[in-house]
Amino acid sequence: MSAISEVIEGAGGALVSQLWKVAALMASGLVLVVGVGAGTGWYLASAARDDALRDLRAEQGVSAELRAGIKTQNTAIIQWYDQAKQAQARGDAAMAVAQVNGRRYDAALQQLAGGKATSCEEAMPYVNQLLEKVR
Image (cartoon, rainbow, N blue to C red; front, side, top):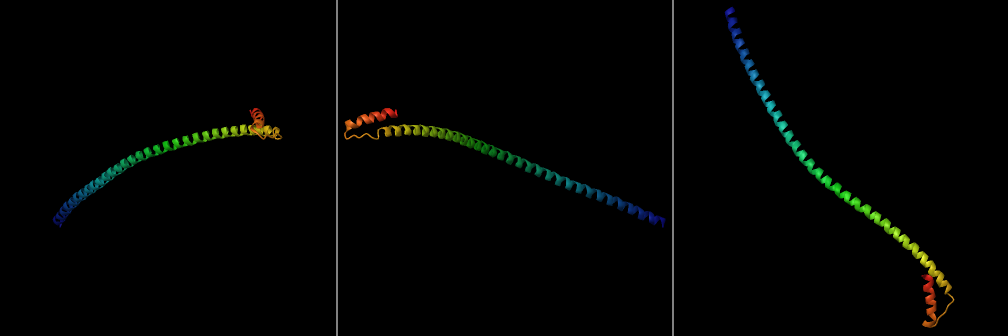
């Protein structure tokens, strides 16, 4: 029986040796498939990153244009506000001058209130006096 057991052990050893070769071949194939998959994923991720960076740069350009437009608009609004304040100050000054002139005109009219004229010759001294007092 020892000869038979040696033959079986020899055949078993050859079978085990062949199984190891098949297992190593399958493992190397699996490593190759995983490596190719990882490489493809890496390539696709790199391409997606490059596309995202390109889109980001484009959006940054649009954002910069919008910021410049907003700055121009804000500058125009500030200038308009300053001009409106200056116009308001000029209007207030004109109103004050008009009030002073109105008071002078009213005072001159009150002094001439009793005068009556029926002709242009009689009215002219009153008109001259009114003009002198308003001046």
